[in-house]
Image 1 (cartoon, rainbow, N blue to C red):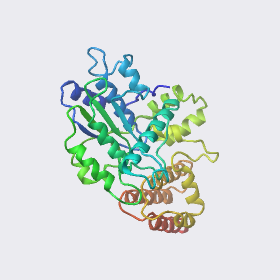
Image 2 (cartoon, one colour):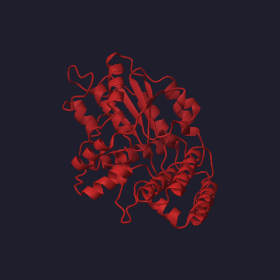
Image 3 (cartoon, rainbow, N blue to C red):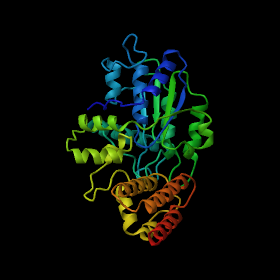
Length: 351
């Protein structure tokens, strides 16, 4: 199944297409924007534009030539899409070369899964870009293009270059490629929060920010691509998406009317037993699933306010959750952060 069309981001597309047409497209880009807004889909659109074979396709890929079809089916040999992987114990106790092979196999499996089901959710909480993935990227950078004249590397969710245990080895290994990428290669990284990346990476990429798209565009996508016709469900899921089409894929209608989405189950657990939830967090594991939980918690509180809850208390609670989310992007212990948030929200309820 080919990828769904890219919705929105017309100004950014025009800028990137113009830079490509004039030969001034930066070789190291960072696409930044809210989770699910379409950063990696835009990166694939740019890869498609770069490889499009149609004459005069300087502003929009034709979508019909062989190269366009290969990109859309995630099979172009010169487009390398790296996504966070949750390898578990599969890579333990083996040498570096075997680890690289393991990552290559895992990425191939993930791409095959996305060809079957292109509507994918956010990476799992423990998924990351291990050092072996960066080694694989460096190896492929050194290869000549298989069919065209350029290679495109997409490193999705680049925040996950910092593994959950806190080591920065993978991110530092990437610096070599970002400093002097081969002339035939473009590296596109994506991140929901650029501040979660190492400053040494930020200094080597050109930052392009993506804004949320309109609810009307999200609605059209939900109707035409996901087949949602029930108006109540449509309104609920569009509201929960908050201008990010990617959230539609993981937004499950909840009987209570509260939004689901990435982190929805954890948000429900936090609301039911906040101190127990805090004790269950792994120290220094604030990125990934924990920030998803905070996003979902803020969405739930907004929905409660819209349904006529105590607006003053809910606004104060939302502000606390958003502050916690900002702190979660740094080197913070989520056990402590969740416990403090639980106590603060408890005090609001008592006031």
